[in-house]
Amino acid sequence: MDIQRIRQDFPILDRTVYGKPLVYLDNGATTQKPRMVVEAITDEYYSVNANVHRGVHYLSQQATELHEGSRETVRRYINARSTSEIIFTRGTTEGINLLVASFGQEFMQEGDEVIISVMEHHSNIVPWQLLQARKGIKIKVVPMNDKGELLLDEYEKLFTERTKIVSIMQVSNVLGTINPIKEMIATAHKHGVPFMVDAAQSIPHMKVDVQDLDADFIVFSAHKVYGPTGIGVVYGKEEWLDRLPPYQGGGEMIKQVSFEKTTFADLPFKFEAGTPDYIGTTAFAKALDYVKGIGIENIAAHEHFLLEYATEQMKEIPGMRIFGEAANKGGVISFLVGDIHHFDMGTLLDRLGIAVRTGHHCAQPLMQRLGVEGTIRASFGMYNTREEVDTLVAGIKRVSQMF
Ligand code: PLP
Image 1 (cartoon, rainbow, N blue to C red):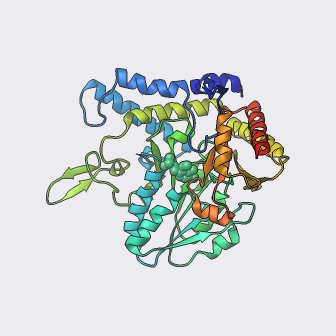
Image 2 (cartoon, rainbow, N blue to C red):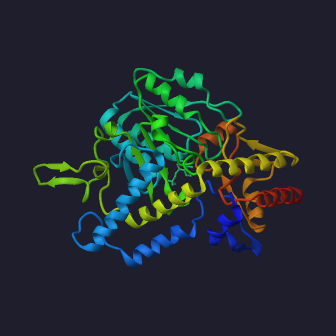
Image 3 (cartoon, rainbow, N blue to C red):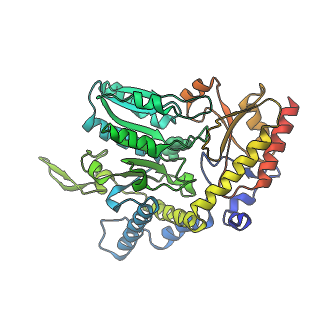
């Protein structure tokens, strides 16, 4: 992998912050965009733009072809069986809300149970709590050990005849833990329970093959995998999606409307009410093609190198506490140094041009489990370099000495 060549595709990486070269280590929050993704947006607005699906005219058909072509690109990327299984959303959060609302309405009654985990992002906790308030469902939580690994024995013990679904992240946005999701899906299926995977942090960093995993649903966001903001995907097995009621009503999602009776469109349109972000989907397909061109295995290997290189050096810093030491871990390092507040560390690193995230990372229950209010998080992308890790480590040392 030629990192310098890759960096040339990301113009933002050349900028400075407070007069220092930008070191962007907040890829867990969002990734930067390669030139072709940004250009796909302007190109389509300048030369194709027309609303999709409904038009007989040339531009509308061309826009529809691009939009539906993007659905095929996503299908291939995650190895879904059919484009009927690919629903475009605004992002992971909307995808989870869609599935919780729809699945909850059809398949969950008072006293029924969902299994989630202690390390979930708020977007995979709060929608279930909203359903709990509406329907009286129960939320059960898989615990973890101090390294940040889910306890699989405890997981298995949570299943009862009231368990209706499991919803767990593949990679933790805080700990970097890569959960053994294939094994966990097999356990759920043994109990006759479907499994929803929050793949927001796995899709950008590792191969995700929905058929190999045998996942019933997966959700992810384009902006975390070098694509535009405002686009996400829900994958669902066709046999499940067929049985789920629509999430939102409106144009595009119907077959026939009358005041007496309305029938719904076939998959995937049943779940796509209103004008979709067809410009965003084209740009997203460009991002996936870009990642494919570099090779997700190459990206994973590079990020793993950065993780190990950074961890080794950071551990030498006096007072360093790293949260998340799972045997199987992705390119995320959450840490605190001595009693330096995460906000102070983040702000001072920023002055050195280093962009990291601080706070609870939308995982407050996990923070409670770790016994901290927040952490500093460095998260790697394909364009980060060994020299940037050196800058980070030097920056942490400098800030630590100031205190
Ligand atoms: N799930 C995980 C694990 C995440 O890291 C994030 C974002 O940080 C989300 C869900 C929510 O994604 P979005 O804000 O794109 O909807």
